[in-house]
Amino acid sequence: MTADRRDDSDGRVAADSRGPTVGLSRRRLLASIGGVGAVGMASGLGTGAYLSDRETFPDNVFGAGSVKLVVNNAVSDGTFAVDVSGIRRGNPGRETFDIDVRTNPVRVWIATDCPDDSALARALEVEISVVDGPSLTGGYRALADVERDLVAGERIDADCLVPEDPVTVEVAWRMPGDAPEEAANDATDLRFRLYAEQCRHVSEADAAGSNPFADRVCEESENECLACDDEFGKAEFGDSPVAVGDTLSLIELPAGADGHEIAITAVETKDEGGNAETVGVEFTLQDADGNPGPDMCKVEIKGGQETESYEIDPASSETDEILFAPLKPDKDKRHGISNIVVFVCSDSGDGDDPDEDETVDCVVCDDENASLATLDVRYRGDDEPSVTVVSTKGGTGGTLFEGTVANGDVFTLDGSDVTRSGNNGNGNGGGQTDRLGPEVEIRVEGGATTPIHVSCSELLAVGMRFGPDDEFEIAGGTTTDERPICGTEAN
Image (cartoon, rainbow, N blue to C red; front, top):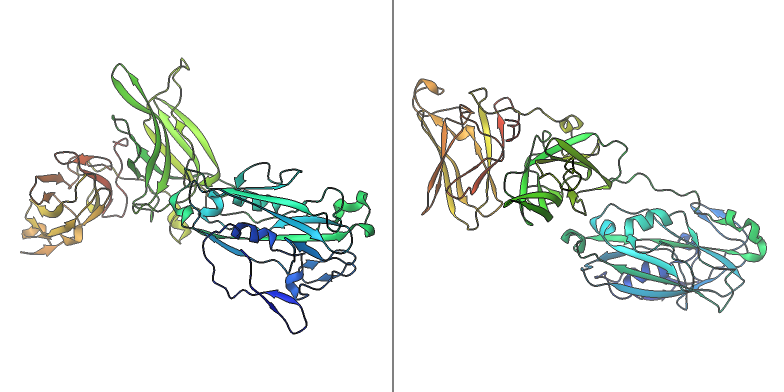
């Protein structure tokens, strides 16, 4: 990307920032690095200004001697941010730029600003290298990691940069094929800085001490954590193997984090004697709408009586690889997965109130030991039927839900919509309570009616399925004392 330029009244040339910003072009990523100038140029010295003997201005340190840096045959005029967006998978790019000097031989350092915590910064892979020299990144690495490491600066000249003998830096980028879709639609700023110091004023032996970026560090990012001890939820695996695209609801979630699930992105199964089991999965933690959930820092997979633990570092809402159940005692075969428990950093829970991040013990809905206030039902069918749910039996009535549902949709049945008659209600004829029960009927237009007992006199747990094709799944529920109901393993 080439910036429009204007002549200021004193003859200096400055970048015109009024032009519109569009998607990543051949020069856009380059501009984030190649268009920068020596540290401090943005302070108002302008393009034509030389760096005088070592002076200190707010937030800027200038090198010694008269220095004028040139990037791609244009005198640089200061650091700036470039908005990067619309990078698609399978569309890699590569660009080079030349850094030259028009005055005296200089040493040159390049540095970044700290990364943001965007999906693009975590997914986009970047390599920065000196042509005919070393890679500054050690190969392709996530942009966020590159920025975090290069914030302390790297020297890019081999033995002092002399006029008309530029050092060439190559920038390459690629979006991995398994990058989340949100990354392709995300945007982030790439900010780079250059620093030049005249060689004749400082000996080579003392040059290492001239790097002004050396003490810069980035604060802890949101996807890094010091403590990984908060259990976020558990996904139960049934008797049948899962497949790519399946989602499993989490149970035992913290208060305020309803409706989370894991979405299977890769799977490995085994088949012993015609009995197929899931032994490994790759997955994403997400909410009921498919948005990324909180970053996971640890995953525990239970198989048989054993548990395998995996650290997710840096913390992420994706595992990025298949995680396996424990090996059997003979170490030759693996157990099938029984359940998966995900952990998040201590400050990664949903909700603004820190007290809401604590896990609440679930309630077993059985033997009339609880009363349900709400029940979440997920539709797992392939079509999009019109559904009506009504309260039945025990002198109850009321429509609890009515609408069209598609695969993955969750609808909530609320006890406040139940009407009761007689002495069991809040009066005679049409009284209301805040509890469900004793039964609801899910009526599919043109199809079957599915009854579900909701008074907790029979077992009801997260993960149970109902309907002719098991198309209605219990995704969650709360009792009248505001505690979640348990999943199938807890019973």
